[in-house]
Amino acid sequence: MRLTDHEKAMLDGSEGPAVAAAMDLLVRYGEALDAGGLCDIRNVAGTMTQPSPAKAKLVAEGGWDKAFAVINLDSDADLDIPDMRIPTCQLQQGFGSDADGVAPYPRQFVELQEDAESFYGRKGVNILATCTPYQVGNLPVRGEHVAWMESSAVIYANSVLGARTNCEGTASTGAASLTGKIPCWGNHLPENRYGTHLIDVEVPVRDFLDWGMLGYFAGDLVQEERPVITGDIGIPELADLKHFGAAAASSGGVELYHIPGITPEAATPGDAFGARPVSEAVGYGPRERRRMYETLNSQGNKSDVDFILLGCPHASIDQVCRAAKALEGRQLNSGTQLWMMVPRALKAIADRSGYTEIIESAGGKLLADSCPAMSRSAPEGTTVFATDSAKQAHYLPAILGIEAWFGTLEDCVNAAITGRWTGELR
Ligand code: F3S
Image 1 (cartoon, rainbow, N blue to C red):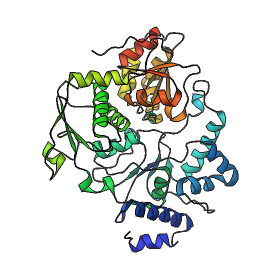
Image 2: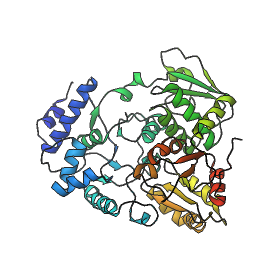
Image 3: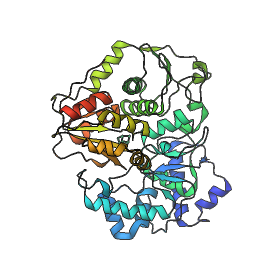
Image 4: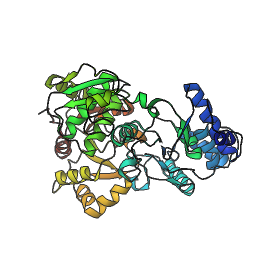
């Protein structure tokens, strides 16, 4: 792999052993991928603070420097970890102490995470603690090379923002944060950003539920390639695109899509496909829509619902407002809990706007930092849950061994109030 003089010097230790270890990792990673060189990046979204038993053991043995070296740099050396070289943020992590008594989450993990936040905060890691860093000010510009983890964030960065990232891992983002470099391959290269499949939408797709089902269809169809969406789609809002991308990255491994006239890299289907011919369209009509709804509800049997989960990916402030309006003046069924996940920075806005009070007066909870899938934690005794998120309906049954219902915000709120699932496709 081609390296600049500065990169070679970093690899040779000119900026200290930790930076050399980071460069060594990036060179090994880049060579394995056959990358021609490294990209300069200006933004990392990774994970340093998320607690785990392995991390607790490393911290007990050698402190946070040791934990970062092993987990985030794949190095057994004793390293002093310097400050982050470029803006770096922490994605979602475990629950914090304000979820004590709500989420059954180990106290020692809460304490380990608080300790991690204080170490990494001083190193220059912005503790955003959300899977949606783009909702709270971490916004790369079009064409910017970045190194992000978290599939729902990666697809948003590539497609909606027009930034360039592959779906990175814990170690590659750790090395990127100390060097400002990442192997230049995959989505960093313009020739890999063109569409591969055209999907023509033949039923009106106008709301959050429909955008999630369309994303689930697109991911299932193209797997790891790049769908281009045209047809009867109106103008999606941020939450719709967030849901679409998370769903497409769940049923497939989509990291980039184009909606000509909406997303920034393609004004027309021709732009989206570049020099390639526009592919023959695959239709998304009423039959496909119903099939997606049935697939997403295929893991629900019992109509008694214990738990409602909203906010996957973490909710926008508009979604929190809508949930508050739907719950205002109502009371949750005594056997049903409702959690809505939100970035902590937006929770502060929800608190000030009175939304938190409305949701909590109804018996629900607005929780930050994490989610049941990430923390493997749901209300005690949950056997059936309902959600408005295609991603959670896809993953949580396997992660927690529970049944899932998928529907609209209104279906979910009705289930929270009555304790019974009555959702249906309208
Ligand atoms: Fe975020 Fe958890 Fe969903 S990390 S994307 S809320 S599975």
